[in-house]
Amino acid sequence: MKREIVSTDAAPAAIGPYSQAVKATGALLFTAGQIPLDPKTMKVVGETAAEQCAQVMNNLGAILFAAGTSFDSVIKTTIFLKSMNDFAAVNEVYAKSFSGSPPARSTVAVGGLPKDVLVEIECVALLPSV
Image (cartoon, rainbow, N blue to C red; front, side):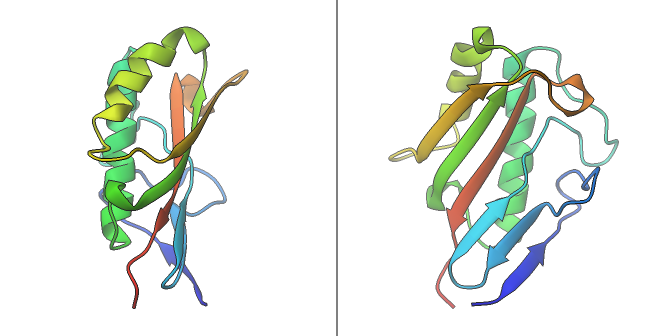
């Protein structure tokens, strides 16, 4: 198995010492947590948790695509919320990205997120066999 960095201009560039995603060739993709940044402007998109979640899912989708996989191959996600009061709104937007059986998931409320956003999501996905 080989470790390979995944990077795409279709998702926000890393804003710290991390990669957008790392894949274990032919096995798994591990994304960094994605926040609701527009990849072109690097500005936060949306004021509500639902609006921010939509941008986060767009960013994750772009990274999955760049790695040669999709939401259908996601096996685990972790959602970080600034407030559990946003759980239902985020859940509704999040669910739209998964057509069949959704992946395993953990959702936690945290004391704060980068750029003071309301939601951050990371995922682990299967990669196609090489």
